[in-house]
Length: 119
Image 1 (cartoon, rainbow, N blue to C red):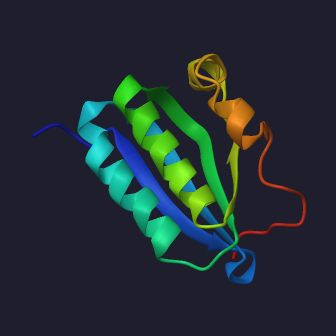
Image 2 (cartoon, rainbow, N blue to C red):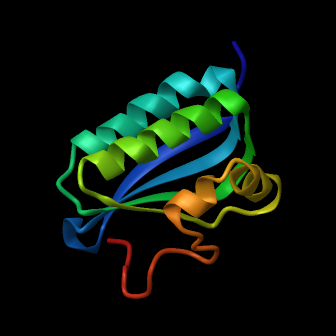
């Protein structure tokens, strides 16, 4: 068994107005099932109108993980949530730019919108 090399954390922020899914580590094929479950839970498990994917601690997104992330973000949008990606840097940012995902979901490089405070 390999040691854990990725982490997906869901946090509700601003009194339930925002659900933030934080990705940390390397997301390859092995991480896709956990990533999909957490994204689906965040979309369906809360009435929060704002859905944020925080990629500040993400070091790698393989092609399958990019597809899972895109599916989750589109599902959130289909459920009427405002969707944004924050803190994408380095190679992860490059992948999201090249694939056009940042164009679809905004480009909040330095964190969530002003006024949203973690609880």
